[in-house]
Length: 509
Image 1: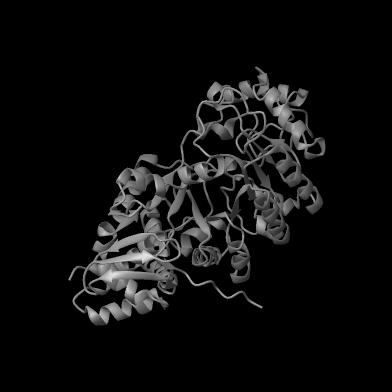
Image 2: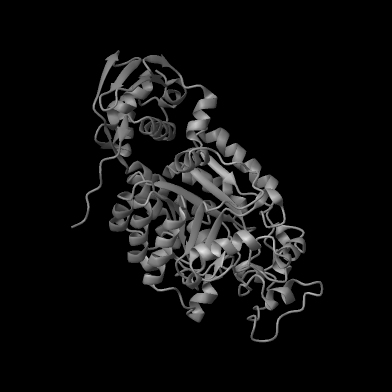
């Protein structure tokens, strides 16, 4: 008998009554998160060439708060400093007004972030429902600390939501040292599991540093075990808090090799992505005109997280700020600032560092002084002094074999506890051989080999752990580790094709 690992490659889908495997190119298109998201939200893939900003912005990013409960020394928004300083945020009513204006402008995508946005959970839920109710695709960024079962249930009811959860280490020791708070790894992993159990679209964002880079391979394995499909690996950019610490360089070639190996090992549907090492900061490039805007917790309106120039304040109205962006996105001071930065590694040496310095207003004397030929710094009091730069971090964590094994056991336990049920279907074939299924809800058909059929049979209204135990009793010749991984892989294949679904979690009273 073949082990369940063969089920993934031999299964196929039926379209329009024709039995056969999905072509690889088409499968890649269907599985690509980026392509599917763009196709769903804007109808087609936009051209990378954009000489002028569109008449109306495509998207908006809302930084709902300066504050965060964690203390990352690479935080690009410099939230730890703002948290200590108790920097003021826009009120709930001001944010409601911003969202209404964004809807009037016709945006199709929005990102709710911070700081840690779930420090303002009631506001987040309200804005999510308003934006998605208005037809906008929404992404929520969170560190996962405040995400419990009740909140996961609420988020699962928001159709079309994507949640980005930050996880910065293969072990608790690595992540907690980077995040500055014990217990943050455990909470982030649990948050990911809670969302996946409810079929919420989850993307894990991993900030790669010299301290956690050696264990990226182990992190990717843990995330595959947990059931995550998309991971964004983002080497640190020296802006915000990271601009005050030297030594962030990461070997991107080694990182890409690790990603390639993980894709080969875990299959096409597993999508770790290394973010570009050259951010699009060159505003003078005609092919990169802005198409979105960003609202900071203070109300300042910017193009994005990498351009530190303000184009107005929310009190001016978003429409007026967007018109200012359209008119001034190639202002001389912006071009001078961009030309002074030879690479992303040198952003900390720029005359104005995003998030480390207050945002100068485009067209102001302050902006001209900061980016002129002599780069004369503004008078004292105009720009807050930067904190001194350090040459290293205070902690140098590592991942021992015991730490890695403990982390693997924790994520595996969460995955094995996941429960599935079989959708209404009719099947024919041999119980110990190939089966052909017809899904009664939508009429689609699917072909399974013998091993996939056995896994399907055992997963009906059971946890993965219970299915593995039943299969092990039936096939004692298959090693336990192989049987566990094959069952996980097959369960995800069946769930992706709609043959299995996860029971709806009970909503707490």
